[in-house]
Structures are given as structure tokens and as C-alpha cells.
Image (cartoon, rainbow, N blue to C red; front, side, top):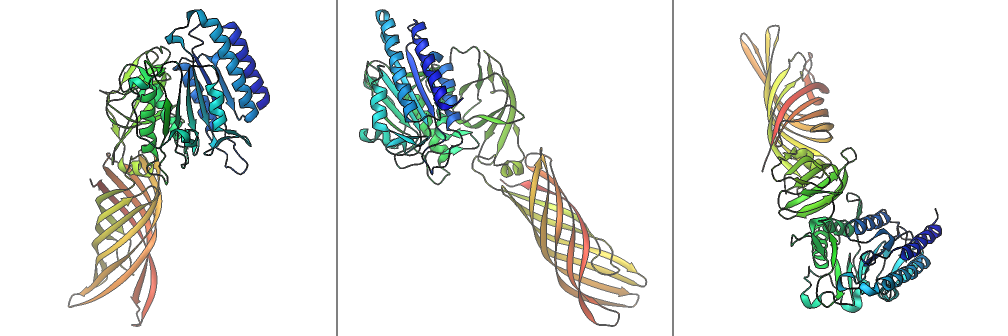
Length: 531
């Protein structure tokens, strides 16, 4: 279905619903929701703007008491599409107001929500190669006939929509009694200031601001515990979560606000106490949580920093809950049932092995891990007629997201009996290896390359005499590695490889030559995470 036809059908639905509906509660709340992945020519298309708009429409319908017949969802619109939608919505509100006039009360005064996700600058929305100026948009929305208009704009430099009212990247606010709903008003919340870029996240599968706004509207922003998310709670939550989520990026994103409201009460955006078709997930305490649905696909349902007893409304099903700390990550699985509360307070979380947490980026702030350990190694013969040697090593390993670096201090010996001559070799050396590990469940398999330098002391003995010679021998070679997590802080390593030694060899004729000798090496070791 092309964009023009879809817009025409939506307009027809709104007009038909306005004739059929006479319920005053159904005419109370209205919504115009836009998502536009494509902006001006030359702007990189967005990935998630239209998906964000669909999620906002679902949330306002499910929790925000916006009947489906009072909501317009426009995907990939241009300026003409938005103009037609505003005209249709004005007719819908006016018709509903006329039918509800005899019983209109303060509880049924109409509110219109306007949400946009897409490209913008400080002056206008960018809609499929056309532009809609912020000034004109505010004028059209506030003239729809609703008592209150609430704007949510998730776009780059969207703070320009409230520049005239002194928009600023402000900290969370509380709407006081004298600043709340009376009969007329406007409230605007934007995802960024006039000079900032709004950010999308592949992990979140949407805009950072919209994700946290929706999580807040689903229960996380309910600071008062009354199962009602009001305007000030929603902004306070979205502000703090958006700033925290973007604090590690090049530009910290600061949501902005402006409001001109006065009267008796705050604006309730969503309610979470009348949803028998959904289930509740109660988080066990303060901390940073990621909640994944659909265990196979691991879709991220929510990411948030929760307070004690935070509850979220979720679709019934199975979920993976991950709690992240600075250097520790915990996981557990749970099932959310419709009309019930899944309370995680008494549920045991399992700690994820630290190397996996680092490599997969699970940690909240830790991007590396340090472990101390020991190796036992069996090494093939380095020189002619020598035997296999046994060695030990003290190890230090650094794990990063893409690689692991392991340094070792090695020592050991070998003894050979060659006819009347006994050969004893002593080893003392240092090596370092770099590895790339692929995680397989709680374990890992990978490959790497290591290089080192050993001091090898050889002693030759016969029944009546002895001779000694020392060499400093460089070596290098590939290795494969298997890792087995014995616990979240202890890992067992198995390595197999072959080292090439550059050695000076004394021939039977007494002349010295430099040769490369290859010796197989097998290693078993362990590492313990350092705090």
C-alpha cells in the first residue's frame, strides 16, 4: 500500500469513528503519531524511526487511554500528509466535543498527543524531502480544539521547537500545583537540545530517548507508586536514563522541556493498574537491568536503571533478565503471566563468567578483566637427541572485547640419556600471546600467536667429565585454545601449538650453524579473576 492510500484510509477511519462513537471517555484523548526514516536528500536514512512510532502508538492505545479510533499513525509521511492528518483530527475532536457537550467535565476535557521520530533541524521536521516548520506545527496542533497539547519530538536538534520559550538541556523538573492542567495548555518534551544529535541504538532497536520514554510509561517512571505515570514523572525518568545511556558517546544527549500549564492537577500519561492482559515484572532492587524477550532471538524489551520495587508491564512470555554491575554481570530466566506479578526478589541470579562478560560487552562500565594464574606445560625436544621437557609458568592475562593478551614467566627442565652422555636442559624465559576467542555457551574456543625469549642452559655429563653451554633462544608460533569456565571467576585453559626455536647448533665437525627447530607444546592452566 502506498503512502497516499494509507493516509486516505486512516483519515476515513477517523471520520467514520467520529460519527459512530458517542462515549465521552473515548473522546477524551487523541494522538497523532509520525515516524519518518527518510528526511532530506543527502541525510542518512534512519533505521528505527518508523518502528518507534508504531511502539508509541501501541503504548498510548494500551496504557494511555487513547482509543484506536482517536489515533492517527503516519509512516513515511510528507508535509501534505501531515496537513491532511491535522485537518482530519480537528474534525474528529470537534465532532466528539459536540456529542459530549452535555456531560463534559474536567475529567473528560480533551488532550491531544503529538509524537514524531525522524530527521529534523532547529527549525523544522524533515518529512520525505519536504519540511514542516516547528512554528507552523505548534500553531496547527494547539488549534485542534483540545484543551491540552503534549508534544514528544525525538529528532536531532529538536530543542528548536521550544527555543522561543527558553528551551535548555535541563535537569528533571516537578510540575507544581500552580503549573498543572486547567483548561488550556501546552507541554513539549524533546529528545535533544537545539545543538545536539538524537541517537539511535542497534542494541535498543530504536531511538535512545523513545526507548526510555516508553519504558518509563510502562511503569519504570512511577516514582509515586500510584500506578499512574504523569508528565513530570515521564520527563524526569526519560531525562536521567537518556543522559546516562549517552554519557559514553561523543555527544551526551540532553532532553529538553517547555510547558505552559496551570490549574488543578498534573497530566496523567499512562496507567498501569488496569491491564489484565499484561503481566508485571518486579525487579529485585536498584541497579542496571536489561530485559530480553524471545529467548532464541534475544530481542531487548527494556534497558533501565531501576529503583527498589520497580515494576514493568510486559507481554506474557519468557524473559531473560540481566543485571549489570561495574565488574560483574548476573542473569536469570523468568516467565511473565497475564494478570500476575513475577517478583524477582527471592530469585537467584547466576553470575556470568567474567571473560564472557567482557568479550560480549555485558559489563556496565568494565571493558577489560585481569586474571592471575599458572600453567603446566609439556614441550617437545628443542635440540637433537633431547627429550620432552616439563615446565611451569606464572601467568597474567588481560581480556578485552576483541582479544586476550597473556604473558607468562616460564621455567622447567628436561633430561636425556643418549648413549654414554647425559643431557640436562634448564629453561627460564618469558613469552606473550595474543588470542581471539569465540564464546560457546559458558566456554570458549579460539586461536592465537605467541612469541618469547628463553635462556636455555645445557649440561653434558659422562662418567668422568662434564661440559656446559648456554644460549638465549627466541621462539614464536601459533596455538589453539579451549577455555572452560569452572566458576564465574575461575577458568581452565587448554592450549596446543608448535613453537619455532631459532637455535645455534654445534655440528660433529665442530662448526656452529643457526637453525629453526619446531617443538610441539601442550599446556593446561587456570586463571583467577583479580578484583
